[in-house]
Image 1: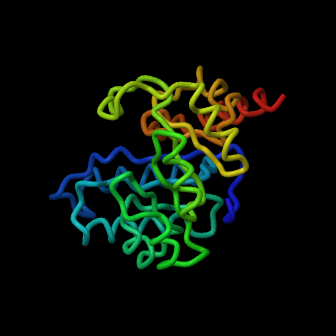
Image 2: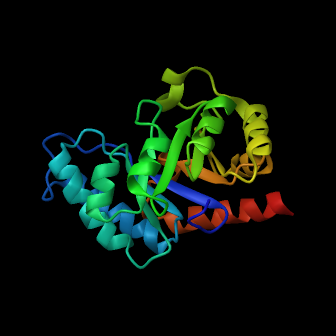
Length: 222
């Protein structure tokens, strides 16, 4: 990753629970801001605003406020799919889905300093992300999780290891069913970090969870 973040990469993804009618005064909008503040305090590497239901104007307002929170911290902010909103709101970059504009187009448009992550489900997709100029690929689902069943069965540890080993030093971040109990297995398989929604959603215990992931990383390295 050319725009360096600490290792292991810990990638907090927001839940997407905001609604089309949400506004800055809404509880769900404020909950996202609370989570971003907690993520910065816990020194999360990356935060992705994955609020797909918001209209562009409200998403921009949320991104603007989140960028103000992350500014000057170790945490980098990415906006799901909307590179234009990320750039104008002062976020660090965007996260691309399999349906988004290709990473190479985003890189040419927004330049070398723009952080780009890509969701991938196979070695071929991760390789395309790397070759297109992405900074990292999120790879999964590694373990079974209800929210990812639409993509088919989990890709599993063997495919994670293959992608990480083949594309090294390009960072592969494990996603899907990650818990404190299995995080070490994913890191042992070669993942550069962990991405999660549910695991990293508890603002009160987030710092403790992050410490647990970092301990798992040290065990994997040892």
